[in-house]
Image 1 (cartoon, helix red, strand yellow):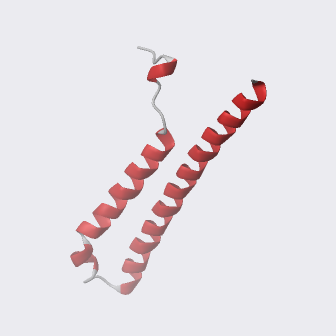
Image 2 (cartoon, helix red, strand yellow):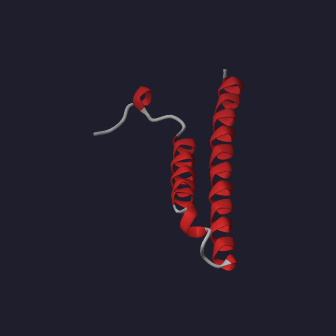
Image 3 (cartoon, one colour):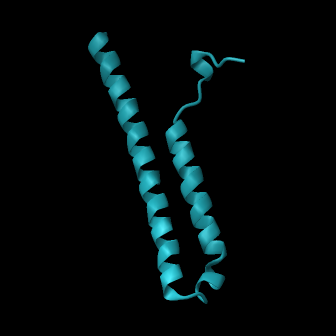
Length: 79
């Protein structure tokens, strides 16, 4: 089935970013007690992974906002 214009999902990139970041961060925090007992080098790798997830999250949000603003500006120029 195809999705018509009014039923098309909005803010897909923001939703994807939220899903990725909060899923990854939740897993890290759920295993926080275990992670506190491993060596420091492994802890640093886990936190770098968390930072990378956050960067991807921010890029996806900024991309969606840019697309939305660009589309609105383009529609205004054509009107």
